Amino acid sequence: MAGKYAEKRVLQAYQCDRYGNVRPLILMNELQGVADTNAEVLGCGRSYLIEHNIAWVVTHYLVDIVEMPREGEELSFITWPSSYDGLRAFRDFEVRGSDGRLMVRATSQWILIDMKRRRPIRADDSLPSWPIISERAWDRKFEKFPDFDAEKTHVFKCRFDDIDVNQHINNAVYAVWATESVGYVYRNQHVLKSIELNFKKEISPDTPEVSVDVAIDGLVTRHKIRTGDTEHAYVICTWEEIKK
Image 1: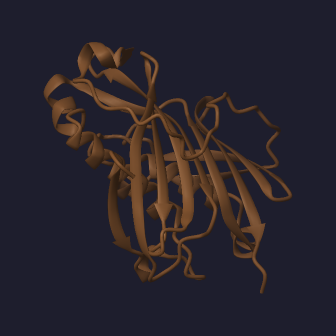
Image 2: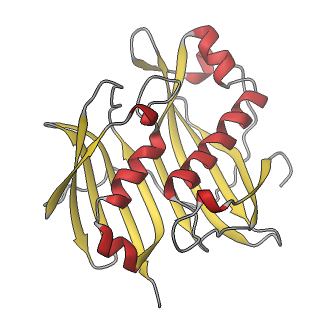
Image 3: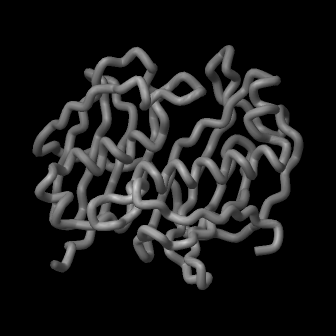
């Protein structure tokens, strides 16, 4: 773990679902939180970004749940910058149990944008250099998600509490929309095993509602999050049946 950043948390009851498993919203927010803190430590976090009117924007999150974190477990959230190619920065994550066992692994892809022009810029022209640890938590490529034929569409209201301090719908909310859109019966019978998100366009805070197109193929569900004809994200979830 040399050079990696880690924070410990004890998973609380209010952070878990009816079966004591971590809620997708909590898992995604904890990953985001530890990434934000590590970026701040490295000198390329929110304070520096605000001062220079630039921002990190995530394009992909790929999250593999090896073992579902459960209520009462002391978890170590670990993250590190894993690569950089000029325009794209890559950050990896692990979540480990109190005994060190791997419970979640994840990887993510980010771009830096000029907030005034809303255009991507090179991070090495705009940020202090940061150390890279060339190790992957989950060795996956970031690819465009294939389109699909929707079986149904679920409509969600955009709530005031979905808006973050960056004045757009928080990234973790997309995971909630995807996992909720399968419906209560399916969700009650399955536990999440992986969630892969491809963000395409942010959703503004004054958006009244979003549509989530859904296709369910056994233990794989596909989701397209959109407003009208504008596509904002694609999500792929894999699940496991709950054995009762």
